[in-house]
Amino acid sequence: MNALILAAGYGSRIAALAVPKPLVPVAGICLLEWSVQQASLAGITHAVVVTGHRAAEVEARLEGIADRTGVSIEACRIADWSRPNGHSVLAGAARIEGNYLLMMADHIFADGLLQQLVKDMGRTRGAALAIDRDVTGPTIDPEDATWVRCHANGRIARIGKHLTRFDAVDCGAFIATPDLAEAIAEAVGEGAAGSLSEGMQRLADRGLADTVDVTGQWWIDVDDPAMLALAESMAPAFLPLAKPTAPSTVVP
Image 1 (spheres, rainbow, N blue to C red):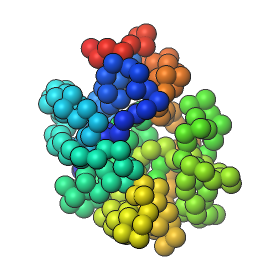
Image 2 (tube, rainbow, N blue to C red; image 1 turned 120 degrees about the vertical axis):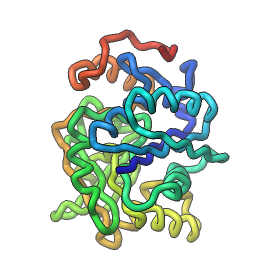
Image 3 (spheres, one colour; image 1 turned 120 degrees about the horizontal axis):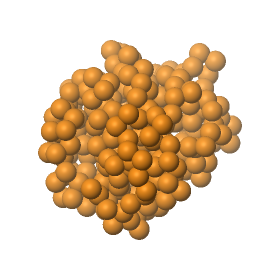
Image 4 (cartoon, one colour; image 1 turned 90 degrees about the vertical axis):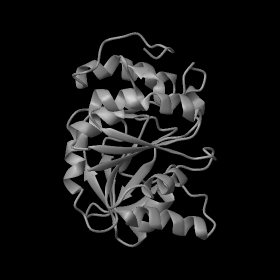
C-alpha cells in the first residue's frame, strides 16, 4: 500500500525553531518520522513525501527514516511551496498508481487510528476522511482546525476552516482515490486557489466524500509551540516508541 505525506509548507506558526517543521522532534522522534512509522504500522510499504520549504534538509533525512521504518520513501519536490496544499497533492499523487493514504507531516496519531482508516483502502470512488466528533478536545486548535459538517449517513456535506456550523473536525488523514486529485485540478482550472479542502468539497457535492469516525482515538496537529508542548507531554501515553523529553529545537 502507498502513502502520500505532505511536508512542503513553511509552518509559519512554528518557524522560530531551528529546524524545518517536518523535522521538529516530538518525544525523541521527528514529526516526519512519526508519520512514516505510523503509516508502516498501518501496512504502508511505500511513501511519497512532498517537500518544498528547506527541501534539501528534509530530503537528507529520508534515507535514515526509510531504514528505521522499513518503508521505501520517494521524495517529490515542488518549487512553489507557498501555494495551498492541494498543489502538493497533485504533485505527489502523480507518482502513485491507484489509492493511497494521505497524511499531513505535522499530525501525530495514536497507534490504531490509521489501521482503522486503511480498512477503506479498497474504495472505488472519491475519498474518506478521518473525523473526530469531539470538537472541543484539548488537542483541537479552533484557530487552525478544518471543520466538517456531515449528512445523517456520515458523508461530508461541508468542509473548511471557516464553517460556523459543524459537527466534526478533520483529523488530517484520508484514503484517496484518483478522484481527489482530479477534483483539486478541476477546482484550480476554474480559478480556485487549490486547497485540499476545495477538492474534498467538490467530492462532497457529488456524494463521494465519506468519513471514518475515529472519535476517542488520540491525535494532534503540531502547528504551534503550544501544541508542540502538548504533544511532548501526551505522546508517551499513546505511542509506545515515544520517549519522555523536554521540548527541543534540535533534531537528535
